[in-house]
Every structure is written in structure tokens, then in C-alpha cells.
Image (cartoon, rainbow, N blue to C red; front, side, top):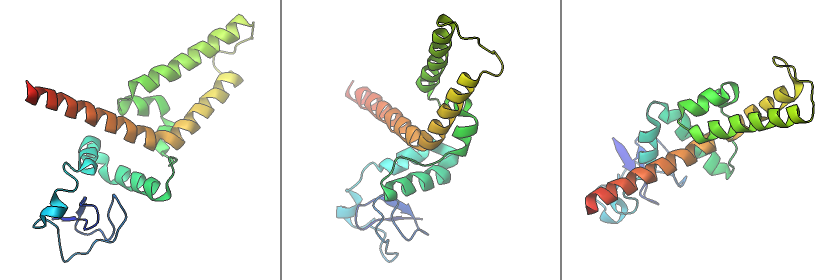
Amino acid sequence: MKIYCQNCGHLNEDNQKYCNKCGQEIKESTNGIDDPEVSEVNEPFEEDLLMKFVDKNQSYYSNKWNKMAKKGKDVSFNLAAFFFTLFWLGYRKMYMNVLYISLLFLGLDIVLYLIGYKYDYFNDPIDNSVGIGVAVSIGLMGNKMYKNHAEREIKKIQETDNQSEQS
């Protein structure tokens, strides 16, 4: 069973004490379904669409995104994004980010080659330093990046659906 927030109309799990969207306390006595004012507030529920997009990792991302929203910060550490940076980005279908990082390394290697840098192919300190910097950055910003990616993909799907309905 789900409960609607009396403040914003967001659909929450029945065992939650605070709304995932606005943070207001949820009163269990009413669920908002019979209240037309509440049921029309937030259709379709964007959080629900995000959770459907995320699929099996709903609890992890819901928790991370809610904490980020409550703190008003974009930084939230993602361990998988830190340790498996390019693989994580690819798994989350953020292919453009994989391309940008790959181009960063390629460009760096070309510049180093052109200036005559003696490159150690397997243990180069410059590539290692840049790799660690990229891993830390993606680890810190991965949750926000994934939320932005999910929102963009949902908007694309909604626009496609709207165009199909108009045809």
C-alpha cells in the first residue's frame, strides 16, 4: 500500500514517516486517494518514474538522492562508480561520459607524445594521477550524474510518447 503526502501529493511507501520528495511528515490516517486536490498535485509522479527507470537499485538510489536533496548538495559518494568508473558508466548507459573520458586520456597521451615525454605504458605517473582524479570525481558525482541521465532519458521517452499520441 502506498501513501500520498498531504503536502506535495507524492506517492510514498506506507512505512515511511517523511515524504521522499518534500521531507514533510506523512500522516498515516489519510492516504490522499479520495482527496482530488492531493491526487492531482503530482501526476505523473516523477519520483515513481525515476524508480521505474532505476529498476532493481531503487532503494539505493532513492536513499542517496533523498539525502542529497535534504542536504542541498550534489555530492554523494558511489563506491561502484569510484572503483569501476568506465564500466559503471557503461553499465548505467552513460556512453557519452565514457567517450569523453576516453578522449581525455587519448588527448593527454597525444600531448605527452608530442612534447617528447618518455611514456611508461604500464605504470605512467601522469596517466595514473589523471585516472585517480577521474575515479574520485565520478565516485563523488556519480549519483547526481545518474539522476540527471535518468531524468533526461525519461523526458525523451515522454516526448516520444506524446508525439505518438498526437499522430
